[in-house]
Length: 471
Image (tube, rainbow, N blue to C red; front, side):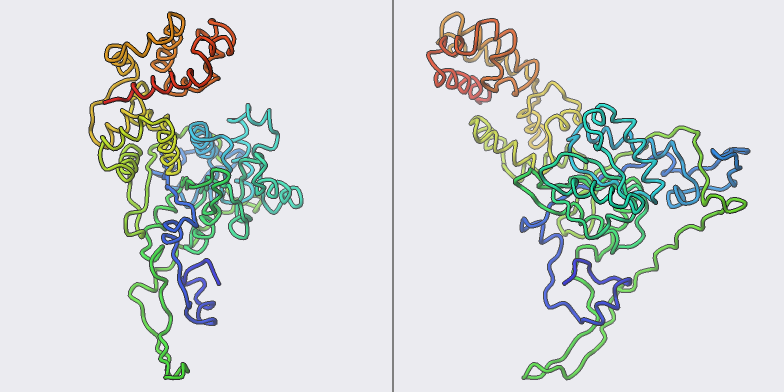
């Protein structure tokens, strides 16, 4: 049994054991719910996009002149270490975690142990608030750490511990590490072979629905993921080595070698030659100057065939996900009006990696109601802000504010205003009763009595929400 499909670097294993008797693809595992689906984020720095060339006379941190050459992604951290690039990657990753989940377990694969240390330092500097609360929030786990590193890894793998949250590593964690709650696999180094790539991706494919781990991200800062995903054999049928002919008794009477079209891929490019400085003191140059920004952030997903990646905008991805759940805006509205079904829709979209806060930011519509936003993106419906929807409700259904006396009406009006300003989270009971201006009406028990009891209060808020989304 193996998790690695047939490739040139494991061909001898398949030749020894023979053809598989059963094959189960990554795509099929995802569709069956056994493996976590994913999205690939290709993030490109200016230096990765255009290359980097030192200026005449540029010296590294040890006073050595850097040889004049055009350095590309495969050279970075092997021939020349660029501190500004490492910091740019760390800054983007930190921002990504702030927008998604700062406690999402994350593994960052670096070029070597030294690069893993530099990356950890850059991440620590950008996440001082989290490190102050949890000194082990970001850890390096490489061969140099020994038992300490294994202890960090053990806590990272424990589903019931929040830290360490981010591990920086080089080769140590590519195989044999079961991290069920790992949500982000980060490539800060070029991955040369398909086998190693699949092993790395395997760190994120575990599913733990009891801990909210239903999907994961691949953040690729080198282009390795998008290049290797494009391999036609990535998720297709494994190439066969031989074809066996059996007699009626099931005995092998002939074996034929079957040449496969394209089965012999072009050899992987050799690692770049390392330029040794005079005296062999250090194996690469260290450039601490310059500034670099992120040039592009592209999001990819698998096409329907499961063999290729396609670029997809976050808004388009969200629209497709909504249409896969509801064929029309009318069907979506009917479900959204019910609070329980609305929560189910939000959860199902979250399982597909869709956050309404991120979606509003990507669409440039921070004031839009989530329902209007997804209807607009999926069905080209008119887009309204939360305040416009609240204003329309006051004009269309004024009676719902007059059932509970003057003070009850004031509370419902304030609740609607809080929704218009901040969104649906303001409807959560009893939390919203504890903050101004609603808390000015008294203790939670006093406010409940104004409505005749807890059930009546919940019914009033439910009716307010239902009417908010009435046709």
